[in-house]
Amino acid sequence: MIRKTTILIVFNVFTGLLFAQQVDLEKIGKIGSNKPIAISGGLSAGNVFYGGNQQSGRQDWTYYLNGTVNFNLFGQVNIPLSMNLTNLGANLSYPSLPNRLSFHPTYKWVTGHIGDVSMNFSSYTLSGHQFTGAGVDLTPGKLKIGVMGGRLLKRVEYDVSNPSVMPNYSRIGAGVKVQYDDAKYSVGMIYFGAKDKAESSMFQTMDSLGITPMQNNAFSWNATLNLIKNMNLTVEYAISLLTRDSRAPEEDGSFIDGILGRKTSTSAYHAVNARLNYQLQKNTIGIGYERIDPGYKTLGAYYFNNDYENITLNFARPFLKNDKANVAVSFGAQHDNLDNTKEESSEKYVGSVNLNYNPTENLQTSLNFSTFQSYRNIKSQFDYINETSPYDNMDTLRFVQLTQNLDASIMYTFKKTEKQQQRINLNASYQESADRQGGISLPGNVSRFLNSALGYGIQFIPQGINITSSVNASYNYGGAIESYTIGPMIGVTASFFKKKLTAGASTAYNMNINEGNVQAKVLNCRANASYRIKKRHNFNASIVWQNRDIKDKKKTDAVTATVAYTYSF
Image (cartoon, rainbow, N blue to C red; front, side, top):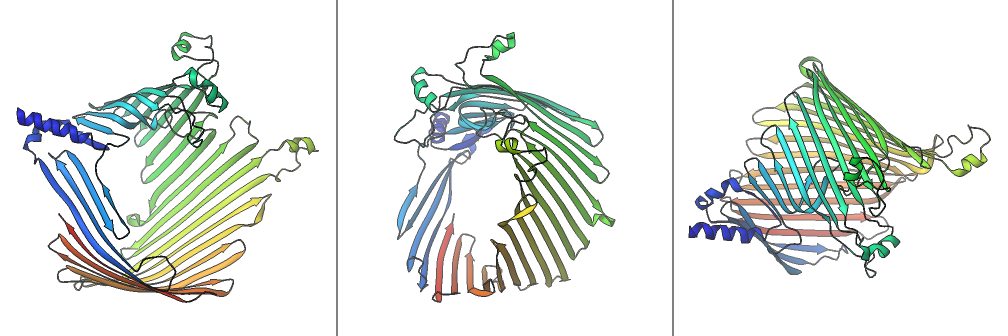
């Protein structure tokens, strides 16, 4: 009895030292059979040597000593320690009482959340907002229940000496989520409520800053139905009753309005999200729709996008014999200004096509294309003052942002045996973006990027040797200026003594050309080696030499060498 009491005391003391630990209470009864303390960690020491004529501000020699230790108590609680020491300074990290604590005990199908925690009900109600309090998730079977309650915001008064800190009223919130999941359908309901504590002592200052005590009641209903075989429909509808100023007089209304505390400053906002998925033989088809009212907001989220309506379409299926080709197509459209009250509205269109074709086991190809278009329509009051017909200046204040991406890759393995593999690969990506007004690209607002690489690799399997080489090139156009970068690379890695020793070396050269003139040449040479002894000891060494030849600047050389030792336990 004394032993068990001591174990529980130690357990409770050390959990107070942790930021967040999840403890399975179902195993507490077996805690006495676990090892009281298990220690693990590692130690590393090394030296870094630097030399050269580059003005990098680095020291010629740096040493470091790093260590980590973790104490595991009875297989349930972890207490980490870490330290690092260099000739630039030292630091020690150890468990201490943090600003935020959380505890997540579990027992069978019950999970608790205590302290500074967060829960997620849905994006329209409670969506990851941290609170100080308690919550619980119950998952006894098909029925799932989540409950939470606590302080969402701590009272913060305005500080003249620190105006960057946003003041706010103390905010308390509570919520519940009930979900029933069956093989053929699922239904759920969510309620979340939050209210600021209106303190008269803060009114004058907060009102001058445009901050009022708020109140929110948000409801959500969701359902998923399997309409027919391989077809399902998912729908969520949410309504948020947001009171901008809880000091406003109550509104004469129904009995429900009285329960919810509806005021004259209360507005109702709606959101709906629906998606239909259908699997027809090898075809996958999806349609999605979402609409969120202008002004929709929930106090259970830090940030919320509203005033938009979008629709998405997607299609995917394999083709050819043995599904050697796969095609996936998606499209999305979004627009805002749903109530037509903004002076500026926007439309966005997104589309993509992905094609993968693998005609043989040794040849793989892929092609991906995506496009994004954003339209901004600005309505100025002068449009109405100066127009002489409905068709005047139709495109004058219509801005278009266009971005297109194209990626392609080919990999061919032309030799594949138990002793050797050889392959060649080609990758290319292109991106273009432009701003247009009235159908004309704006000067200086067009950019193009092209990156490509041709590579070859050979692997000698019994010897553990890999050789890779490539030629890389890039093209950049922006602000009416063109530049190119091109250069080769070759590298080799090998393992010895039953893979206890691994070593590698590589060299790369690249040249930058701007407006037809060579601007820079860079040569890099690298080498490294690592030797492992009995899984716990590891010795590492590396060296890097770099030569830079930049136009109108002095040629520079730099060497960085590192020697290190690591021990783990």
